[in-house]
Length: 120
Image 1 (cartoon, rainbow, N blue to C red):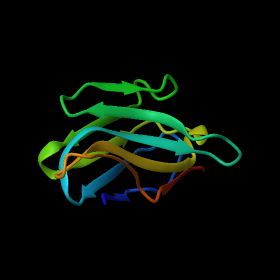
Image 2 (cartoon, helix red, strand yellow; image 1 turned 90 degrees about the horizontal axis):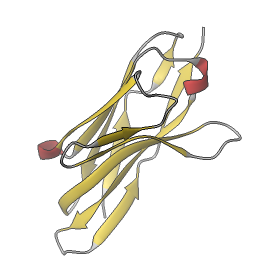
Image 3 (tube, rainbow, N blue to C red; image 1 turned 180 degrees about the vertical axis):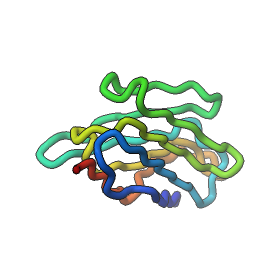
Image 4 (cartoon, helix red, strand yellow; image 1 turned 90 degrees about the vertical axis):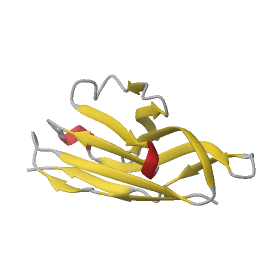
């Protein structure tokens, strides 16, 4: 089983910044993609940003130019730097990882979520 532990959420004023972190642990052989999703009240969970082990990243249109995803493969950790935050960025942010166990079987895991609130 793979555990994902997120940190870095909180309350920030519009225009402010936050940095989310997510560390994966377990019998991991490889994580080929890690990403961040978010879910606002009454809305479906949506992709925010995703990055492969080779560093290829993609972003939701709504965050392009404001958010940056990065990862440390050696530490099985992914980060999300969020700048110029807007009230509409308010949501629970979930970390996601897809990869393979040491046994060779694949996994897809979610973190418990961290709240990000953008408000004055």
